[in-house]
Image (cartoon, rainbow, N blue to C red; front, side):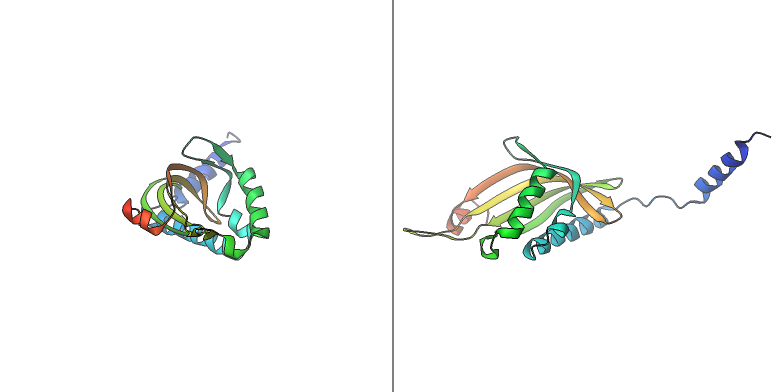
Length: 172
């Protein structure tokens, strides 16, 4: 008898008896991505750099509208410093929503719309309100520890300097 035969039988039985890998549904991806983003926002508010960074894959990259890219290493360095030193009052507020999710295996593509409300700047002419509106396509992966963002590409990025301006252009 061939020595490889028992191993072949064992592998065949294991593959037949093993449960099939669970395919991720759009609802599961949406729920997981939402949880990861909420974890990121809470970590930012509590200055927890480790929790904040845990929502990104180590291979994460971001591409802005003009095509410039940022790596995980560069973002990590910036965020560790920012979370350690920036006063809470100087941090922007963010409102976001997910408009589209597609799933392939353990990976999901999500379109995110976000509005960043920067701290009010006081000038001699009065307070200035700055809002940044973005639309991005992001890729997320499901890991045993939860969902992590693998990449983000900004499709749209615009600044407005008052609520009145946002209403006029239909973004608020």
